[in-house]
Image 1: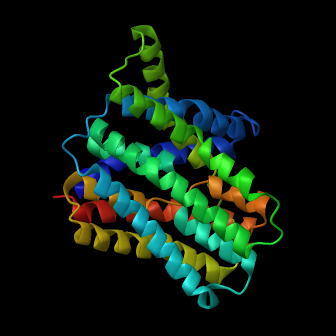
Image 2: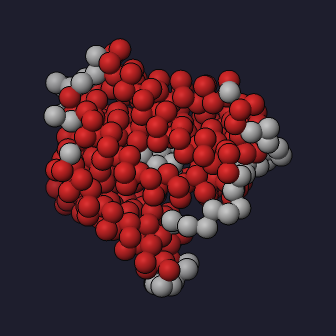
Length: 305
């Protein structure tokens, strides 16, 4: 456990540094939204493409690992919907609680995977993300369409945004090129790898800059349930499914990493644009981000030798 915690210390420091820069107004308020777009549209796709291109997953439990991750998301969010009356009677708040359980901060996930497991961990986490991102987007869209009012997007628009997700496209391109035994020209591949190396530190600074400690505007009961679901219930379900599916070793640890991560910042944009409870969503993101400093090392230490 000590080794895991030590590997996560630099990540925590970068988050704190990003928060401090934002609070100091450096380099400016307009910078952080732009950095988010650069990370999402350029840097993270470069990381996923190069990871997929170089990944050697032939001897791993890759498919059971990814399916177990997705099954944990589906089981957890289904349980929330079944217990809706215990969560909240407000539809907008309910949609944000479901999003809080379904969406994952992949930036932090890649950083932890690289720090704890190295290149193989990044490749495994990329495979998990490839299957989980469409599922958590579909769950979020379903929750918003079913619970939140008014909903201001069509099903076609929502599904199109999933299909054109740059993370999925970059992963698909990388695995397709690897499967076809194709290579990129050396200078181009070197440039993409340089972009990939810049991804995680910049992404962590952006996550840190997004932390907000003012959660007074959020409903306390839905907030508490969302946080407990994301940081406790989902990891427990994921661990049980790993046992059932026979997923072990590093693959099980990657499943647990995905389950213990905080809620992703994209959930706030969805909530704000599609009729969800945006203040509650912001509070869920902040609370899970802060608690992940404890939950991620705990769950990883539980499954690592």
